[in-house]
Image: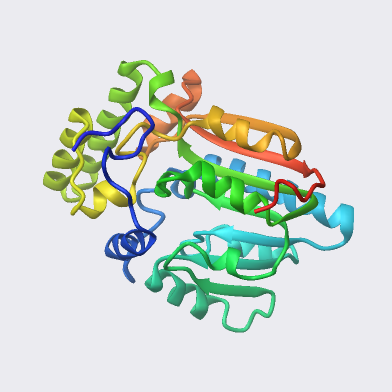
Length: 288
């Protein structure tokens, strides 16, 4: 099956329960989030993202004296720790049961943390909670219809609040074919250097080069838009601008290999993005 121009698999409608099952197949109890995640394994990149998050939380405390955060897909809590340490109240939704079990063990005695198992992607919308900040780190490219999701989840944000998302692949059609191919070759080189299931990695990259999707393969379905056309950052700006006074697109370089990360950051070849929207406008007509 080939990917269509919008990034979804032609003829495939990913059900939330299917995505939950696939997430658990990849993100099991022994999954190491840091190993293959540039935003976690590279200190400079991690610090830059954390700096953005800290600034957003601090701004909410300054404005209202509190900060209620919805973190979607927290993994094992790499950024949750820091947000809680600043005194924020954090609600986490997590689609992977093993990841949620890890979080429950980690925050069992922290009354500021509310942890929700979210197998259908609807738990945040099923409650009456409102938030000052919605945070997504390496999340949107897992969601088949990310534009609708962002529209809905920003409807949960109070006036004056913020939305931030980081670590998603920029929309491939706006990039040169050579840039996209280089990304994939760097990823494959990193896998070979680590000896991480090289055969599976080569097979995955060959499918990506050909635009062929295997709906039975968790690697193809969990990394949903990495296997398609990336995430359309300009479309997300269009979703956010009517609701927020300020929408900032942050484009940067991100790859797994340490020396390749250092080189790419120096030559300023962005292919990953974050998006930060602040000062949520009032208005009920555009609610969730």
